[in-house]
Amino acid sequence: MKYKNIGSELFVKNRKKFANKMNTGSIAIFHSNNEMPRNGDAHHKFKQNSDIFYLTGVDQEDTALVIFPDCPNPAYREMLFIKETSETIAVWDGAKLTPEEAKDQTGVMSVFWHHEFWNTIHAIILMADNIYVNLNENDRFPNKVSYNGIEVAHQLKRTYPSHNLLRSAPILTSLRTIKEPEEIALIKEATRITKIGLDKILKYTKPGVKEYEIEAELIYEFTRNRATGFSFEPIVASGKNACVLHYLENNDEVKDGDLILCDFGVEYANYCSDITRCFPANGKFSTRQKEVYNAVLNVHKAARGFMTIGKTLPSYHEEVCGVMSEELIKLGLITRNDVKQNPQAFSKYFMHGTSHHLGLDVHDVMHRYESTFEVGNVLTIEPGIYIPEEGIGVRIENDVHITASGLEDFMEDFPIEVDEIEAAMNS
Image 1 (cartoon, rainbow, N blue to C red):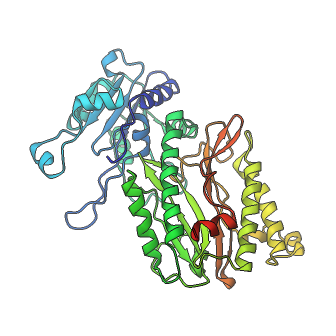
Image 2 (cartoon, rainbow, N blue to C red):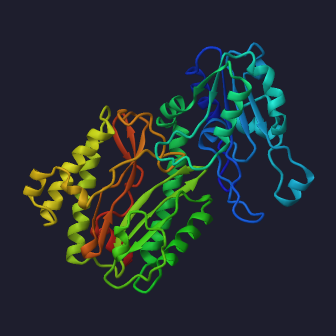
Image 3 (cartoon, rainbow, N blue to C red):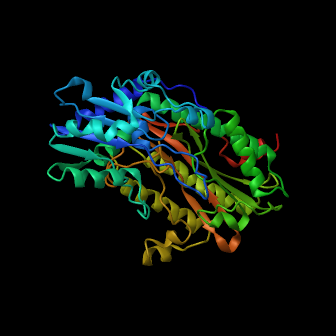
């Protein structure tokens, strides 16, 4: 991997936290993601299952983890199964982790080959009353394709029908939303690299460049700074394209007078950043662009003040939308009477959430929608205004960390004010 070695301390700590929340007499089983086929004999680039990375730090396919705190045999209380390197694999794809390397990287002392999993685990499962299975419980997941976690769960249910199957997701979501200091450091590194990319495209962009050329400048800077790549498919949307929330084509020419919305992030050691900035193609905001931009920035600043410990995401968003309504009235997009008749009148121009959790996934796990903000949460703040009839779309997004003393903004030194953006583009 391009990123620097993380060390085992984080993963030892994470497994201990998970084990402490397990029911007595339970075993938990986790598997890596499948390698996903493309066409012919090609595969998509492998992406590790976030939960198994959180618990082990192993970033390769054919990996399984077993946690059984109450196992009578101490050697089986933590077990790691990894892919055995053959001569063919070593020649064609490079050697995989050795057992010694796996022990050093994860802190798990009982390491086996992945092909030994089912034969090894059978007798151990029989010592347990409950089996925790690891499923993708993200409420946005369409569940149209099978994946390793659900296939393993089905096999366990068929083979051990008298065992109770339990969900690991509620435990992991409660743990993963509270970031350890090591995780904060990795996210900060992702945001550090993000700023390098942002500084580059602010200087690079001018009328006549293509959206995909801006995208290319970003991935160049990310790769040369040891990032895995983008943390999600980047949005480089000029002019009216910025009013398409998930615009991914990135194939239009940037025209003089366009405002460009760039929403992108860095993945470093599987941890993500997520930023959105808007800037004028010619380096100077028009009067109307500045009005809309500053309206969004006013909402962004207000949202920072609303994000406080103990508040729920829905109540926070409701407060943000109140400020957004006022800004839209000032811009002449809606009237006070519109709001009186329909409190959701703002949604014509602001139709998405203000914030989401951030971590191993860009839209990171959230314990429950009604959960309150806590110390250790990392979230985005990203209000926006989209006016298709004017060809203007503005979103401003920063990544923040909730601490006991207030918000830590990972992007505090990024250009965000109109004059800061213009100065960066014209320096």
